[in-house]
Length: 254
Image 1 (spheres, one colour):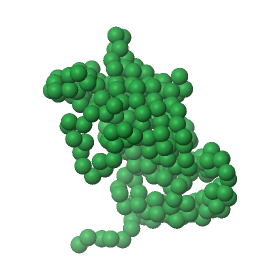
Image 2: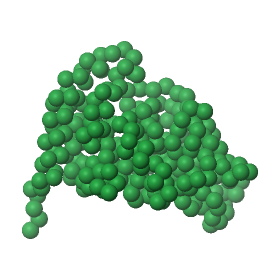
Image 3: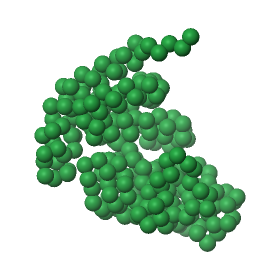
Image 4: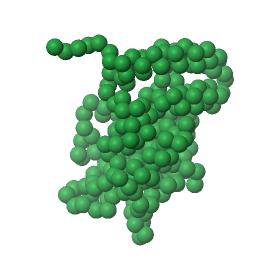
């Protein structure tokens, strides 16, 4: 028989999220929303306290600094309780928490995890986002379908003589992009050889420097032009030549 009752861990997370929402998020949310400058509306102190309680990291395994609560029901319980006080604040924590499990534990190599995970755990303001949608091609909104193999992004990734990569392009709609310290982007490689899709090459790697510009809003960056330099260390995995490539990046001012 299927038991629909919450277990002790789920109840504990629900109660923790509810208490935090009532005592920390709700009393400040309305006042922050009234501030004229969007930068001032970022609930920085609330984000710091929530991070220290584990709302960014709870989906990670205990050995990776989390609570091992990677099931969807626990995530839904936390999201609903936080969002009951302020949905914008809930976005900060939940988008990053779910990506943490996917990126750090399921997709990264050991080398990547060794490099990025300590930074993520030790920084209360280490949030994540994706920079995929392009304003010109409209690629990146295919949430329920795979990106077509013939898709061509205008954002370009160009390999340099030293094995590093330069990415140039425009991306928009990056939720909490203005706070993100780790992002995943998609770029086109070898535009002139798009038909040679089976050839494996050295992969794009994590970005170490990015120059970004664009308007921001309370939770979503509307437009961002990016120029990123990628180093060869901590590569992101194999890809097909001519196909769009996903690359987790760690941006900093150039």
